[in-house]
Length: 224
Picture 1 (cartoon, rainbow, N blue to C red):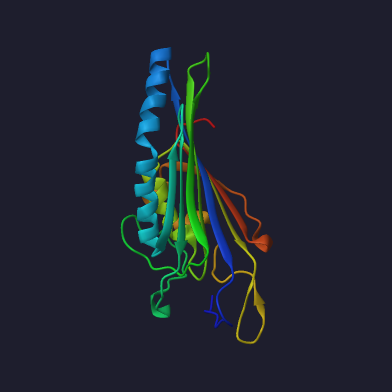
Picture 2: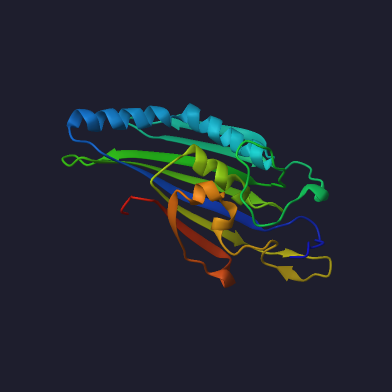
C-alpha cells in the first residue's frame, strides 16, 4: 500500500485485544489451590507491569502513568497511559510481518493505553482450573499495535488465545479524501512468527469491509 500524505495527525484508532486461557486439571483440592496460588503469584501486578512496560518499549511509547492493583482472593489489573514519540517517517514499517520479541520498534501514539486484567478461577468440585487474562493495546497514529502481539503471546504462553484487531475512525489525506485504514492486513497470523504459529491450530474470522480481524489459536493437543 502506498504511504498516505496526511492532512494533520493520523486520527485512526487501532485496537488489539486478546483473551488468553491457561488450563490445568487438578486431582485434589490441594493441587487446585496450589495452581491458583502459583498462577496468581506468577502474574501479579508487578510482573504484569514489567511485561507492559517492555511492550511500551517495543512500540516506542512514552509512559505517562501506571495504575496497578492486586486483588483478593486473586487476580490483578494494570493500566498504562501512553503518549506519542516523534517518529522519523523513514523508520515506519507498515508491512505485514511478525513483530519483535525484545527489540525496539518506533510508533506514533496519542491518547493511547495498554491494559491487562487477570482472572484465575477453579471449579468448586471438579478438577478444572483456568487462568484467563484480557489484554488490550490501543493506539492512535501510524503504527499498528500488532507489532507487540508476538512479544505478548510469548510472555503469556497459554493453551487458547483469541485475538481481535480493529481499526476505527478515519483520517484524511492532503486532498481531503477520507481513509479508513492506512496499512495492508490480510490476517493477524501474518504478525506472528513461524515458531509461534507452529504451536497452535488457527482459525480466522475476518470482516474486511469493516476492518475487523479475528484469529482463534488453540494449542495443539488441546480440545477447546
